[in-house]
Length: 197
View: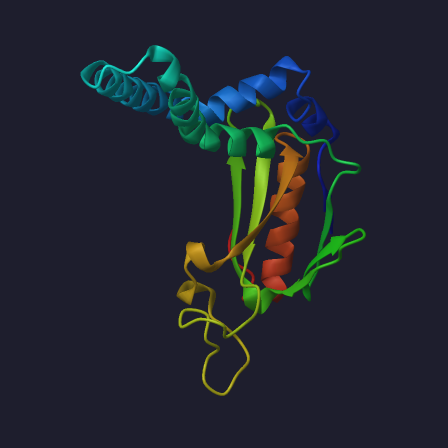
């Protein structure tokens, strides 16, 4: 079964499109009050220090810009993950052997290393769902991903989300998700190592 990013995702990643700005706002709206409080607090501290030591206001301009810029880094990270142009849509093949990415940088992950399959709605983008596949990069690299004694298999229940790499695809909610669910159910019928969606 081949799963591909929906063509509609382009409108949610183009910086010139209002839909992409709704997605950015949906991701960053909880950070805005914290950013405002942090900036107000530090600007007030700079103003009090400048007033106490009799320094001119022009000396506080550079530190104020730095203080405004540092708390803005989370917004820059959210923007870099939201506004990006893709040369081509991602494609992933799910079969009995595991997960295989199609394209120039191919990755093949056997089901024994897959820790989770999730499907969530994309905030700010109605009709788009994010299909996430979490996998251990290399088996046996940490305590939680150590293979079972006598086998090369790592039980998915032993894996923690923080130790997984994530591969994400954007899918159309109505058209692609039902096909994905059916395909994973068929694969799970033959291979119990495949995690539930």
